Image (cartoon, rainbow, N blue to C red):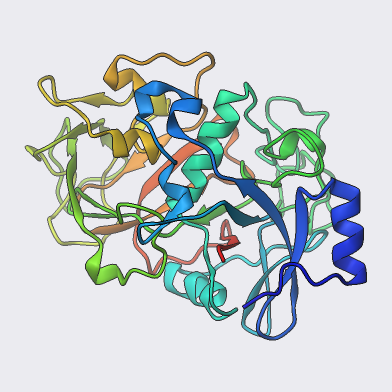
Amino acid sequence: MPVIFTKDTLRASVEAATGGQMTILYDDKGFPSYMVRIPKFNLQDIDPIYGSGVHPAFIVGGIEKSEIFIGAFQSKVYDGRACSIPGVDPTASVNFDTAKTYCTSKGAGWHLMTNWEWAAIALWCLKNGFQPRGNTNYGRSHEATYETGTRQDGVAPGTTSGTARILTGSGPASWRHNNTFTGIADLVGNVSEWVDGLKLVDGKILMPADNNFNLAETSWPDTGVRFDSTATGDENSSGDIGDPVISNEITKYAGPIGDNGSYGYLQLANWKGLTKKSDYNIPASMLQAAIAPITLSNGTYSQDPKGYLYVRNYGTRFPLRGRVWNYGANAGLFFLNLYIARSNPDSAVGFRPAFVG
């Protein structure tokens, strides 16, 4: 387990430079990771529509935590350990299980960043009126093309050839979650990130009730919430065939039940545009986990959450967040991809470590 309060030169310098908002934690092999401290907050402090009490990201197996630590940077793997390090080409082309193992192998408390943790940060950002930009246009932001990072292939930002991942944290402060260099970098764009603690099984949403990253996947409860479809597909379907609809039942499947293949999918160009079954009351947990927008519970946003939504409500699907370096407005803090099988490695898919003591 990392010793958080023992001072060393690197930790002392990082904490001094960031006013204590960022620190260094070491894993079982002594590798350092730059970690951002996120203090707990209450749901009602974001918006009473989310409910009351501590956000589930700060509850692990029923035990309330005062803080969580999130990797400031997307993971770079050294000797089988996921490290959060600035200025490196993030590790990509890993499937879900490999990414999770790289994180949990670091020792007790270490884990692959969870969907609960991602949601907490996203909701905090929205409450504070800021959603980070990122590498969404070949090494630069599609929204502000003057904002650039350092491409790992050495090619100039904006060049539409090569593999346009950037070195971790090489973008401006506006690519950090809090709009300062003390924040979490590259949550939007660069590489999509696997997150733990959520899966879709033939349209059924399964996830732990809180941030219990130690809970065996076989014990993740069925929430009773479903992703329905506006269209029926099969093994001959391809591309965008309809819209996802959140419900308590499934009337149409976009592909063959139980099949993890890549056939047709459901897409929304605006996550906020998700609709629901007309007589369905969405559980607050779906809002808290940034799976469904508060507009479905008669809430309003001061600014629109950014990002697309993709769903395949057949087979078993694991979530990706943030999106990729060449997808422009498709990317965003609320981007949610639930159409990829756990075994799918891709040069545009990475991950991030987290820690809770």
